[in-house]
Amino acid sequence: MSHPTTIPDPERGMMEVVFQTDVAYPKDVLTAKAPDSPTSPADEKPSVAVKEVAVMPGLPWVQKEAVKPKPSTPKKRASRRVRFLLWFNTYRKFFTVVVAINLTGLVLAATGKWQYPRRYTGGLILGNLLTAILMRNELFGRFLYLLVNTLFAKWTPLWFRLGCTSVLQHLGGIHSGCATSGFAWLIFRVTLIFINHKNNHDAILVTGVTTNIAVAISIGSAFPWVRNTHHNVFERHHRFIGWLGLLSTWVFVVLGDSYDLNTHSWNPDGTVILRQQDFWFAFGMTIFILIPWFTVREVKVDVEVPSPKVAILRFERGMQQGLLARISRSSIMEYHAFGIISEGTHAKYHYLICGVQGDFTRSLVLNPPTHVWTRQLKFAGVSNTSTLYHRGIRVCTGTGIGAALSTCLQDRYLGFETVPAQTHYPRRYLIWIGSEQEKTFGPTISGLIHRHIGPERMCLWDSKQRGGRPDVMKIVKEVYSSWQAEVVFITSNYQGNQDIMEGCKEAGIPAFGTLWDF
Image (tube, rainbow, N blue to C red; front, side):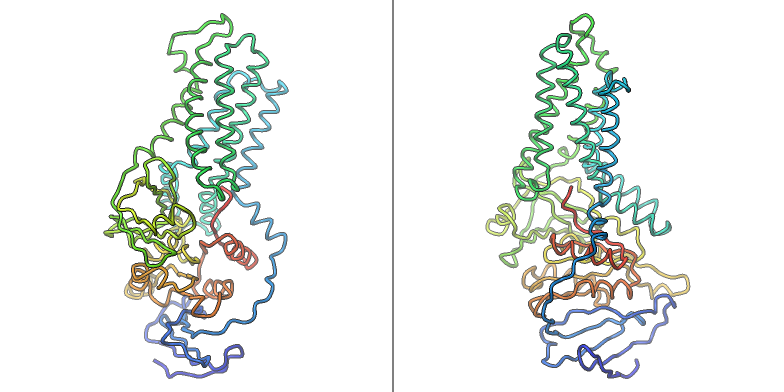
C-alpha cells in the first residue's frame, strides 16, 4: 500500500489520501473517484479531515467525517422541457394512445361509418376491461417480468433494456386507459339500448345502467387524489363496487345474448351465449380477478418495534429481490403494499419495513399482530428489472430502504474474462439517506446491511448526525461516474423523488422513481 498523501481541498481543507494497489483490475474499471460515505459517531472530530481508502483500485471509497452543511439556498427548478418530459412519461403515453385509439373507433361507430361496434359492442367493452384487469394482475405481471428478465438481461443494447423497464413500470397507463375506454364503450352500448328501447327488454336496460354506475364508481375511486389521501375509500369502492360491477356485467352479458331482438323473446339455448365473444371476455375477467384471492393465507409474523416510527415484520421463507407484499389484518379488507427485504430465495426469513403513516401502520406499532393475512402470490416492482443491468445505483430515503435493500443484498457479481474469478466486483450501489438510521430501524436492518454490503458500495447518510440532508444529486452524479452505472432506481417521498428525477434527467442519467399516478 502506498504512503498517505496530504493534499489541499479548497472546499474542506486538508485531505489525506491512501490508495490500495495490491490487485490489478481491467482498465475500464480503474477510473474515477468514489462518492461520499457515512461515518460513525466515534470518528467525528472538530477538524474537517478527509480520508480516502481505495478498496477497489480506481474506485476509492471516500470516508468523510461530518461536515457542516452550507446554508441552504432556494433550489433551482429544472427546465420546463425536463419537467414536461417527466410528466409525460410512459404511463401517460400509454394512456393517451389507448384512449385515442378507442375514441377514434367510438366516433366512427357513433357516426355510422364503422358498423362492427354496433353489432359487437360487448366485445369492445369487455376486451378493454379484461386488458385493464390483466395489467394489474399479479400472475400476469410476474410472467412479464420473468420473460423480460430471462430473455433480455445484459446482452441487449442499454436503450432497449431501459425501454423494457419503462414499459413494465408504467403498465398502469394501459390499465387506466383500457378501463376508461371500456367505460366509454359501455356508455355507448347503453345509449344504443335507450335509443332502441322498444325492441329491448327492460331488464337489459336496468342491468346496463347498473353496470355503468358500478364501473363509474370503481374508476372514480381510483383517481390519484382519492387513492393517495383516502386509501380506505379507494380500496373499498374500487374492490367491492368493482365486484358488484363484475356480477352486473355477467347478468348484462347473459341477458343481452339471450334476448332475440327480432322475436322479442328469450332464447333458453345456452350454446348461443357460449358462442359470443363477450362471454369469454367476461369469463377471463372473472378468472384473473379470482386468482390472487385464491392465494390469500393467514400467516405467522414476528413484529420488531425498534422505534415509535417503524415496525419491522418478519415472515418465514426467502424471496427474490424486487417484490412487494400486500398485508392486512383481515382476509379481504384494507390491504397495504410494502417492499420485501430478503437475502435471497434460500433465506429463512423475509422482512417488511412499515413506517407509521396512517391508522393501519400505526396499529402495527401500538398493537403488533401475531398473524396477518397476505397474498402468497407477490407483486413485482420496477426494481425487479435490476437484473437487466450490469451495474446500477439504488437511492432511497427513510422507509424507502424497504423497497430498495433486497436489490443490494442479492447483488450478483460480474467478472471479466481478463480477471481472475476472485476479483469479481459487485454490481449494486446503495445510497440511503435518513435520520438516526440505526436507532430508528433497529439492529435487524442494520445487521442485514453490514453483513452483505461492503463499505465500497454504500453511502449511508445520517442527516441528524451530519447536520442536515446532503446534496443528493452531487452524490448520485459522483457514484454514477465512478461506479460506471447504467441505471438509477429511486424510492423516496414525492418531493424527494421529483427532485432526484429532475436532476437525473438534466444530467442525462437514466433513472426510474416511485410513481403516484397509477
